[in-house]
Length: 107
Image (cartoon, rainbow, N blue to C red; front, side, top):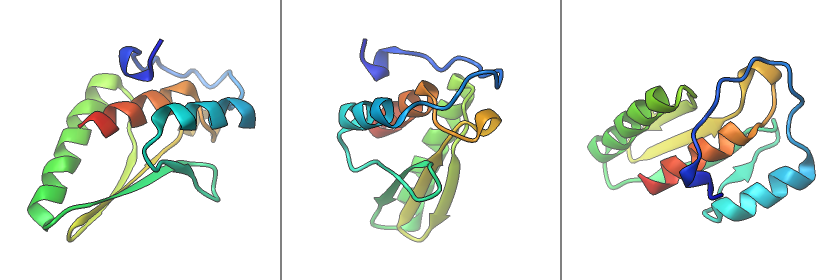
């Protein structure tokens, strides 16, 4: 099933992070310049022509995050938004992180 067709489920913290092999496969499914950064978080930067458009994008992410119950870290500046996603309860990546990234990408 496609990541876009899935919904984030609450993480109770009693699961291990995804393996390298699984994260590599899920990154291929995202297929849009997402990376796993040095800290082990799913990461992507978006560029915009101005602050207003970047802020509108951040607001859309906020609405999506509330709907999914999974919240990314966002850094916004003039013409740019950086998105970092990981599951805080396990200090690693779960399928939820990739589901949220796929839905952000669709925005």
